[in-house]
Image (spheres, rainbow, N blue to C red):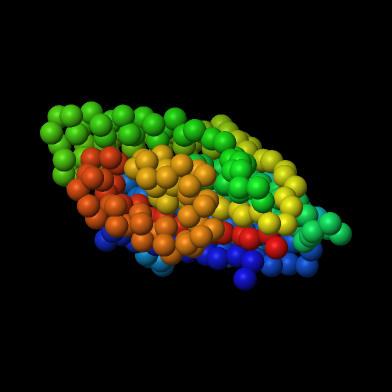
Length: 287
């Protein structure tokens, strides 16, 4: 099969990630979303496991209904979001909900064209948030198709390290201490003039990262959420190169097993705000 999907909830949590593939005449859309962890116990939408889980599933449904070859990715996102926002309001998301409680999500969208006469594919990327898109070329070299460093994640990791240095090792206690900072950040993300994540009420155009690439047969594409990318940037168990090698040789399920196995051990304690995060990926093999 050309593609493989995998998604795993963090320990004891609702899975607020989503991976979906839509196949159309002439192109295939690969979609990975990572709903941000709720920062309040209150719910606005009764359906779904949580407001972020509802948001990513409803948006992907709405996007699937409007997908067409002649629409730009940005225009299609805005069109789908109009439907999602109306559904959120109808389901209970009233104007009095504080902005830190509005659901947000990352969106990594790769549109893959059908192959040309030489077997090459064109990729069009539309990215919001901090998911990763890595490509292993036929010669084994690896490219990051969407190089992005999330300054907010770096600030969170620094805050976690400071709490650990204070001797606060319990993840629940660390989360409580981090909550005011996280709520202030979520408010900012939901009210930004150019939002860098997918949010319900954008005040202006999205600060999306877009790119186009041509990919030959024999390459391997890996689209993954930050939860799975912990194998590289948080735990240091892989480089980008070794991650793609392992993905090609052993598959996504083996990478998820490696991630969860490490997080179950003592070595992972104190390295992240949450002891385990939702982890998801899509692999596409260019035949």
